Image 1 (cartoon, each protein chain N blue to C red):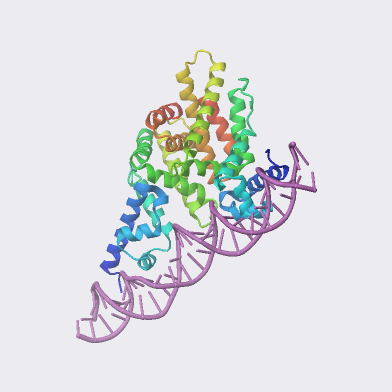
Image 2: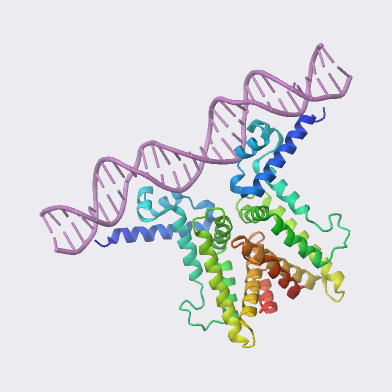
Length: 184
Length: 184
DNA sequence: CTCAAAGTTGAGGGTATACTCAAATTACGG
DNA sequence: CCGTAATTTGAGTATACCCTCAACTTTGAG
């Protein structure tokens, strides 16, 4: 038998609650208790719909990243500038979410539940997107050279974003754009 | 009355135990219980010598970073290459410690106990070291331009190191050196 | 309607954490 | 030695967390 509408609505409320808590107070504020209270649901209901707290957190983070994708359909029409702008937008518009992403990625290494591999896959896809855009713009670029440039540019963007998380007065956008112009 | 030798030795044992645990299993393995067991000390003794678990962890991380400084006395003789090499060395030789540094820096933002400011101060000092070394090498560089270059280079190094923490097969050193040559 | 499956409840299990403190013990200058 | 202050003990406190489960209610297709 198919799912009931009630369950689907509850799931949506839990996801919304998680997103709201993550955006406002980061991972620290996003306890199971808080999620359930915000969603108006008891713990048992949560575990009827999700395997773990981590599952819903990862889902929200993933959705947030996808939401700023300049080319969600993978049509191959995005430029490096588009991609850099999307990256900057993610960090400026959703700083707490970005921090959760960083923390989750770093700590995922300890727990071998496949989270690390997911992060890596996501990163590699992003590298590929950047490299493709670079190759489209400069046809003399070999694939390997494009990949290297993409890794370094993404590294710089990640590092500057990290820099900004520990000092919100850092002019992240300015430095990120400068880094992009030097590295693409 | 002055400190007893016993207390000084106990403090050293606790620091050693913490360093060993951090290096082997990261923050996750470094619980108060584990520290006390490894050091052969009860919890009460620990709190007679340290204000908190965080205090000893931060001390060990700081000492580890200082241990690879190419110019500990600040004589102003270090080159950009020296600084980059020291950075790479810290991550390659003490990967768990590096991860602890990253996690602590990211999560420090939530807790306002001054940890964030310490990280920022440390970063700014490093930026200054890089910028000075750049300015010494190229005297036409204005201080502002040198600072910007230093921030971007350090951002790239941080980002590539982060990249490496989620995939140990990533050729961190190769990419870091390439980034340094493109950005300095 | 019926009734099986989907969804919900909510108290509490299990576990881990950092940290405290009054009392006992030890170090060591005088 | 003596006495004081440094050190150590270790059982506990306080707390927070994620998650479970058996009983109950609601849904909606046939």
